Image (cartoon, rainbow, N blue to C red; front, side):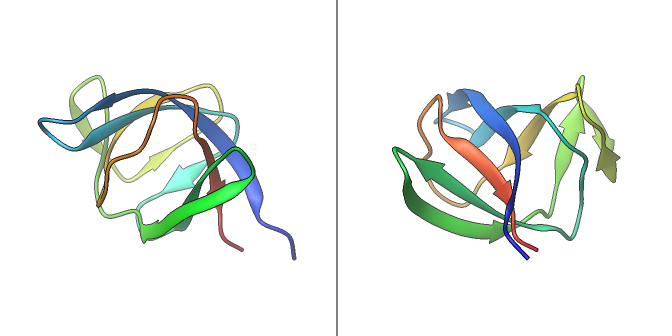
Length: 84
């Protein structure tokens, strides 16, 4: 099964290592995701922590804007895919 595009990074806060992602599909803690920019895979990671409006959540749905703790730096505009 192909990887599913679930959103795009609208902002990255480098001091705290958090990416703001506008979701096009649902995402939950425990899912495995990858970041892609310019058609090139940047890296993969497991979702361990995410927030909506500074509140910890286990799951977010299409249309939500989440803050996600990321393992490495990512650039604004990078696409986010859920690994199936």
